[in-house]
Image 1 (cartoon, rainbow, N blue to C red):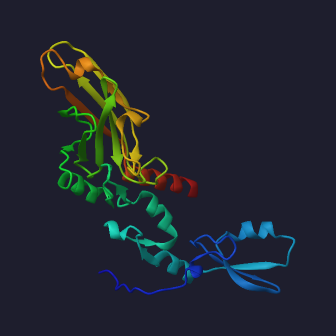
Image 2 (image 1 turned 90 degrees about the vertical axis):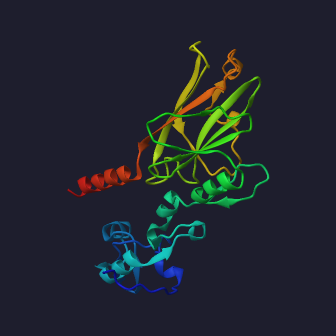
Image 3 (image 1 turned 135 degrees about the vertical axis):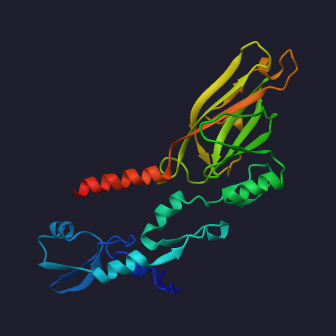
Length: 279
């Protein structure tokens, strides 16, 4: 059975190193020196002693009690108002925020000021704006009509509920089509965030065999500046002959999204690397 929890307030300065002012994290050490007031340091004793070998002698003692406190002192996620229910160890807060799936994003529709988590933005786009929403399975193609210029189509990963947005915009007589993962912190720098690749193609209606296709990494965006397909680094340019075939049939856009790195896989690899370093 879980132990009872309590909420209380403490000065933030108690959680920061007096020397470098960064959040304290285990292991911590109490430093004692002649004519110097004892203090708590986040650096390892050897590193501090080497840097100050010419000064008065110093001794160190591990702060096991403080380490236990630092490992268990938690605060609610800063994105609680957007739906995150996590309580995060104080010195791990920055890492959590870099990968929190509830980090807010903007509605890309011009003039709409909604700013919320991807999960809630999904409900907003499908409900308030009536944009089409389609579930997708990673590694399998999804077929949908080519959106009209300034048109949108929302895709939702069936395994993890990641939100993707297909956007179309005019590109002369052609149409530019692009795909983005809707999240504020999902780039490669974000610890544990899954990464994706995609293949997008349009085949000419009928039996002509003409095809336009691109394959690229799926970038992430908070949509704070909107999302115009033709303004992106990578987009599919669909030529007029594929948009307006002789048969008059509506062209079909095929999208296949592959997950190339999962948060769980990343954590496992990181733990394995740490284990090897300790051996």
